[in-house]
Image (cartoon, rainbow, N blue to C red; front, side, top):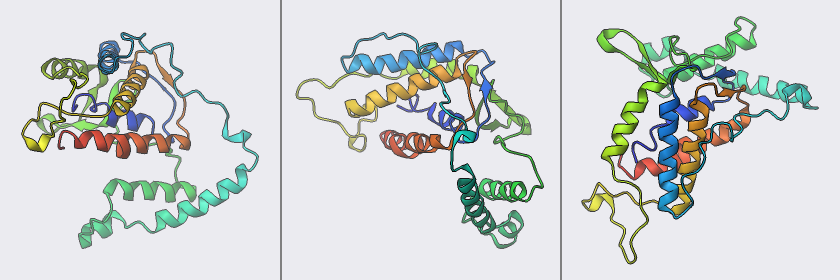
Length: 250
């Protein structure tokens, strides 16, 4: 389960509202294939037809049905957003204040974002997007952050996770449906090798994995992320994602 929910963090970051358009340029075909195979193993355990076609070329990725300029009441919406963003960003503590007072009420990343918003609204900046580290290129790297071997920041290539994913999947148990009359064994009762989830959640997990497989395949293109993606990212991270992570205790 830890392996299957592993792509969630990168997936959420790739769907973050405002993310610029990009095209995957890394050697990611093997990881994309492995993620899709894992999705099909979930489907097979539920009795669904598997294998299914690899989603590359069959699933529309970030298709845009309209542009902001097509919205009739764009100006009122912009004005309302301007006022809300101004109030929200002005109420964030500065990094200087946080250091001096030890205030840890918000993440430093939130404070930096608030400063970016204030600079944009005041016309002092044209920085519309910021990765977690300036070395990250989302077309070839994962988006969660960087590693620090020997004290130097190093971004992680997407394709490099294929070996880890394959090894973890091989070491873990294959998903299966419960046997007739089988009692669900909870982790806290001494059997950490068994994780029980509903068929509905297994089906949703398979769909999320296939979406990720499509988005990271070499040549996959994604348009700019609209704010409507926020509800989906929240569901993946704090909704089903949190539920599934709780099954393995982390």
